[in-house]
Image (cartoon, rainbow, N blue to C red; front, side):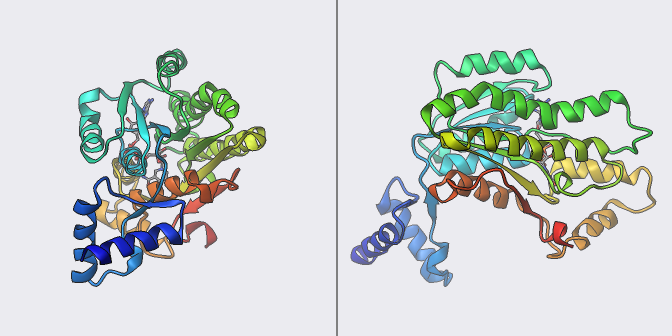
Length: 309
Ligand SMILES: NC(=O)c1ccc[n+]([C@@H]2O[C@H](COP(=O)([O-])OP(=O)(O)OC[C@H]3O[C@@H](n4cnc5c(N)ncnc54)[C@H](O)[C@@H]3O)[C@@H](O)[C@H]2O)c1
């Protein structure tokens, strides 16, 4: 048994030296994985192999949200220390913090910050800088207002632009200089399919997420020669509280039930499947891995074919 396990581990290492078996203790992890491999007839591909990001520090905004917490946990599993930022109190983010602490040997710190407040973003960054070198930024925090252009208030417009576009700019601005100095950095902005195609009654979201794709391209060009990449991920619908709220807001002007509307969202996707938060998180890790080091300035849809139709 031991020889089989060691052979599998060795094959993994040889096949791709940039990947590592996720295990702090081979004797504990591998038998468990191998037994599921054998019992459930898994293929070798399902063996838990992750990109090595040991020693990197990832700053994730929107840490307490559905997608942000999944990205943070996946980056921690890949070896990153994590700095989480969100506007919610630490006790709300505590579950994600505990899960990262329990599963990994990585450090996790959390900062409560309203990213709409420019001075607060600056102050939190000043707190982070002396103790942490930020290698990876994932701008996830976001919000969405549903209203026709003529009904949308200027305040709602400003908030959506503020959190979806200005906040990523402010965070990148704080840490890009040190990434360039080090000669390594990864910036990933979570845009949306609304960053690629428009939808009605979501003008501030469409404008801010499209702007975020523009910011991504501009940052990519300014940092391309310094070992820093900047990409946007454009998901279609992921079943999260943000989407629940969006459907409820659309329901206000519709006779359809919540479930009917949700089904419509599924049916408009060529794959007839929502995107999973974990699929976005895995792409983030891929972009941070050596395989992603020549990918920059892109806006990658993870959308079940939505933007091709
Ligand atoms: N869920 C989807 O279908 C979907 C699709 C495409 C893109 N996105 C984008 O993914 C990101 C995450 O979405 P989600 O579905 O996880 O939503 P979510 O509501 O679960 O998470 C959003 C997080 O952002 C935080 N946040 C909002 N405003 C903030 C502020 N001013 N300061 C600090 N933090 C703030 C919230 O507290 C929350 O934790 C958003 O940018 C969203 O636009 C989501």
